[in-house]
Amino acid sequence: MSSPARVRFAPSPTGRLHIGGARTALYDYLLARQTGGKFVIRIEDTDRMRFVPGAEAEIYAALSWLGMEWDEGPDIGGPYAPYRQSERTEIYLEHAKMLVDSDHAYYCFCTAERLATVRKEQQARKQAPRYDGLCRRLSPEEALDRKNAGESHVIRFKTPRQGKTTGIDAIRGEITVENASLDDYILLKSDGLPVYHLAAMVDDHLMEITHVLRTSEWLPTFPLHVLIYEAFDWEQPAWVHMSVLLNPSGKGKLSKRHGSGGAHAIYPIELKEAGYMPEAVVNWLALMGWSYDDRTEFFSMSDLIGKFSLAKLNASPAAVNFSKLDHFNGLHIRSLSEEDLASRLVPHFYAAEIEVTVAQLRPIVPLIQERSRTLDEAVEMSGFFFRDAVQPDPQQLIGKNMSPAESAAALARSIEVIQGFDRLDTESLELSLRKLSGDLDLKVGQLFGILRVAVTGQRVSPPLIETMEILGKELVLERLKQATELLESSK
Ligand code: GLU
Image (cartoon, rainbow, N blue to C red; front, side, top):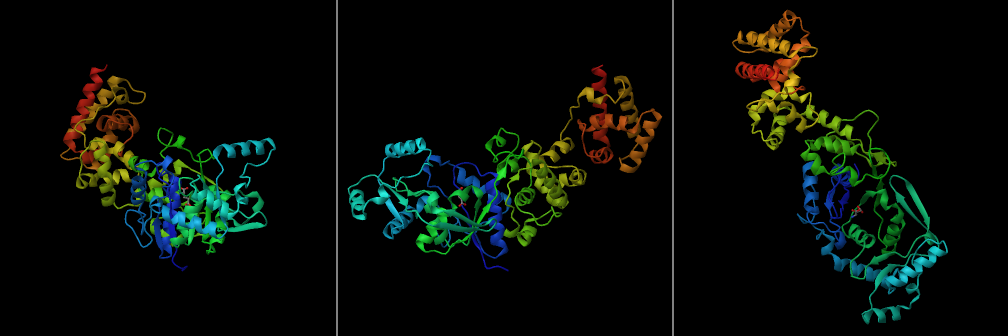
């Protein structure tokens, strides 16, 4: 086994946690648990303009729901606290100054107007826009004087002009760039707050992070990050740039368009509300960018902890496939014990304003476990068991290729048959109703179709005969009579 990994999930609270972020957190979590290491949450909230209240709380709620408990974080503390970057600004300032002192960074006093002019000129010359290095040429004494005189400034990284920088990505191998192609990036803004490049590197080092898992969107600035580590003379972590998630069409990065109001839920908390199980979401996310072999698709969290490996992360982006999620949810619903499924269903019944207990749900669980893709679908399919009355659509009470009168007659004969029972048991009820369909010169499907709508109020339901047995003779008769009346009055 590899040595204990310290991994961090470092979201910015600039919006809701979506499935891409949840996937990153999952890989972090798996690596930490697999190696007996630590899973750390760090909130990267130095961009005050884009701060969204409530975002941090949703991150915790989503990760908890998905079953990824963390070992250190802003809410629970830990040996490397604080874990919120807005509470660490002194540390970044101090480190930026260390880089200035070691000649790896410099104060820059250029105004926004000057930078805009430089950019325009570079564009006119068809050059890549980048800082022209005016303040890089200031003597340290002059820079310090201007700074001490209170002139507004930023701190820029003094990117080497010569040579090349090589970083090693765990998925892609060596990545080398010419230093001349890089900019003198800003590390600390004029308000004294750091940008990601400084804050994340400093924190990853101070928090002794061993593996940095983030998406390939960070590849363009990866050389800068390697250079910052080198400038501090720190040991590089393992860098892992995961492929991004694409829209279901495979075109373009997964976007909000597919979120709220869009075609699908892309936020774990919405998936929860829509009746998906956390185990299924985890299974689905794990396979978006990682695979074990070509065959195995069912993974529990403990399977994943055992089997996950960085070596099997995929370099190419994965398109999000929502029908796969339905598929996994069905698999995980079927893998639960009946008791467990019943207790997970309870809140979804409540949400549909049906107050049931686990004990009341137990008998119907076997009927819906095989047929439901989501917990909400299970409620839709079986809510009629607990409602006082059902409201069948009269049109649907008319059997296939039958008239309303023939359908009403079939219902009346079914009532007679059922009245002959003391209590409904599936075997003899099935025999009697099949026989009745023969007597009426109907196909079994025609008769059962009418009875299904009459008894459940819907066209799709758990198996009819078992359903009738559970509902019991009295309730079945009541619903059949009500349906007959409905047919007759709508003639
Ligand atoms: N705060 C960064 C983001 O949300 C974190 C990237 C990283 O994991 O280093 O994109």
